[in-house]
View 1 (tube, protein in one colour):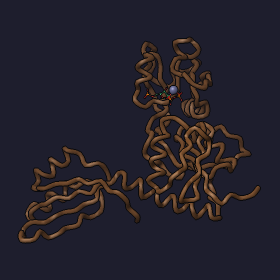
View 2 (cartoon, protein in one colour; view 1 turned 90 degrees about the vertical axis):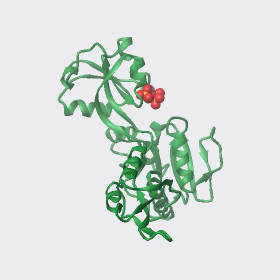
View 3 (cartoon, helix red, strand yellow; view 1 turned 30 degrees about the vertical axis):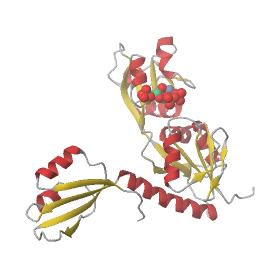
View 4 (cartoon, protein in one colour; view 1 turned 45 degrees about the vertical axis):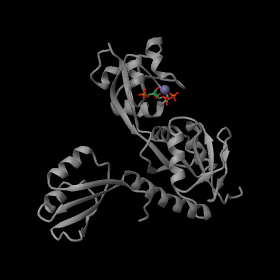
Length: 297
Ligand code: PRP
Ligand code: ZN
């Protein structure tokens, strides 16, 4: 097979991960010739192209070498790893991406008396994730029937085709609408960057490495805030103790006010109003929380 010299990333064509995934790639400096209704988007500037597909197909495309990387839910990747044939190359989760958070859970009808996984013994559970569900049932030593459905799992109990379900939960709205109660979480999921276990060692490998570095920068920055504040030397210690985690703050002198200092700190996450109010009580003034635009370690 002729080797490709351009990197190819697979992502969901239309769904919950599409917009944030595109935004992430844009922030990494990648731009694509827009052809949303088509399967293939040519990358301008960098030699990285996009393949827009059904999310369930993404792991297989990477395993077959059709794509080098994929942006996909951990749930889809894990399910593939549990159920794919041995003839396919193994995959790995290269990076968690911090969006598309949801969980794969067991849910039962409100009226069903359920306390323990063992209460599912002999019952039928509908799911799109037979691999992950099967593993969980084995771990708990439960023998249950797994009813594999392609979608609309949540209506199975009402239709009488299953007694419980194992499905993704994000806001919980779908469960409430179907009078179901979430009981056990099997997997905490979010969008991840998936790739082969061994990365290519050609130009694509170099591009891949560069892309991962940018991605790390973008992810770090997305969660970073720069906190600026003024404090007197006497309250400095109390103020510093309340700063949200991160590297040591930088201190700057304030012209004409020898007992005052300007403090600058990079914070690892959001800084809430509550945190700001606490820091202010400890003696800080003139506080600013700024987003960070780019960062390269
Ligand atoms: C998922 C899942 C539930 C719903 C849960 O479906 O299968 O139906 O989201 O979300 P909620 O807790 O916010 O209500 P999705 O919309 O991804 O579509 P699909 O099941 O057709 O793939
Ligand atoms: Zn659904």
